Length: 492
Image (cartoon, rainbow, N blue to C red; front, top):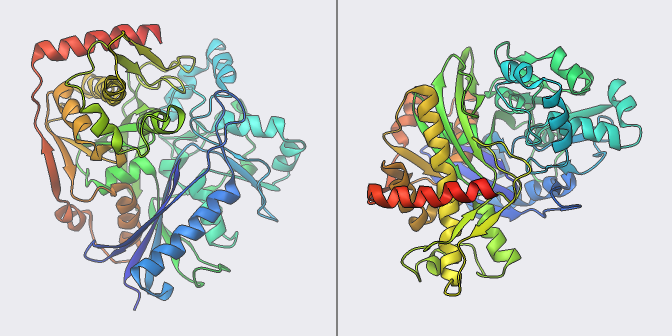
């Protein structure tokens, strides 16, 4: 009897697969890294075939690790890096170009031109988003303009656009399902978040033929079944889809209005459940779909910091200061403080609340006695400062406090960062026992659609708090830290 959920978490730096049972126990977890492609400064790409190979490899290894047969999988849930954009041929399934990653800044000039034309308010009212190269629409336009013959093929209906959830679902179903869910659609700049449909006026603005677009579905329903795969049998339902941050919000059981979580992954993403009606931020935050379950629709406010864990990877790969990412905490603990050193992680621009794609990373306050420990500590604090700014903007927009700050993602395992975050926020930071909340969110959505779980309340009862970090920072310390951060951000 099928009794397990397979969760595929296709992220920016790799693919993670979880095998989860009905009692929410992890039977296997396997990750495969993904190559990052940097054709030019500020450009970031992924090879779609390599993404698919990472999914194949991680799924197969997870099933072997769990010691179960593929026929025991009841459903598949997918969560994904969101705005990353791919286009492929509907007949052959062959990509026309590499996927353009959400971090890529190549369309910054296009966004600037649209702002100068006075289009930002029009776009924001319909999408809840800002005009920034972060989102998918200008990436679609770039692909159609720069790949020979692509626009004509798209207008004929020969090509398919998708975020990574769409691409993975297409491949899993042998090309039978060209779909996405509301959470991913709401990150494209082409989707009207009030009407819950692709917006013809937005498609015209960004030169995106509607024949290119996938069908938009709920976050928890059967989209299709596996077909023609070497590593899974035919007939397994793909039954849950959500963008990674919305999946983490769901996996953290943030089902009530005002409940929030922050995921510290490649970037840092703070989301607050704001209920059934969208709120348009006045402070640079985004309004997005949190999920759709049947007729139930939930929205979220989101603040995005583009670089979080990626700053640690930069220290490892670019500077060679640590051999493994977790070593940064040990290095940072060799000093009692960062001193006057401050790091602004604007390696690919600044997200909310600044939205400055032209900003670049900055190390300030370096002196003769600065050590690698000071730099490591400053990098961790730079992540914390960004999240603090997001939380303050969210409090101001909603009038709601965040009494408990739920965290997840790889960098949330860093105790030094979590303690610093608690001090800046003046609120407890709570790390759950299940750190893989993004994958769990996808699993929960798939399980709800197939009867493995029956309600959100059943899922909420399973959520367990792990380590709790209470604020220890004095007001004077907090103001000192924030003062040096604000000065550095202005210079970035």
